Length: 109
Image 1: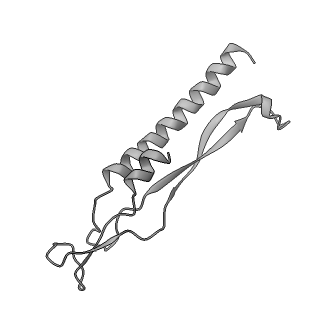
Image 2: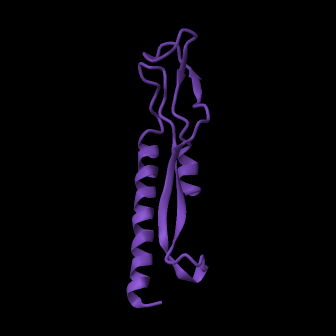
Image 3: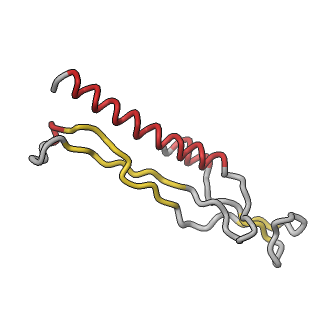
């Protein structure tokens, strides 16, 4: 592998990690947001990576880097807190928050 190929692999990894960090930052910034007027709270997003290959041979040694293959929304339910005095409370007095878990965002990523 030439020096140029090494820089290409490193550059693609840095670019993919930059996208992942942007998603994590967005998740953390919205961790304590409540549902909007439409009743939907922010959903945590997850990044999936994919290896890029140089040739059609499928040889793992010919890896050309990594790319973001998908950014998906976590469809789990956000936490609901009983706070009837909150302006965003529903008819039963519950406020729906985002499904972002700040600990998972900092540790699992």
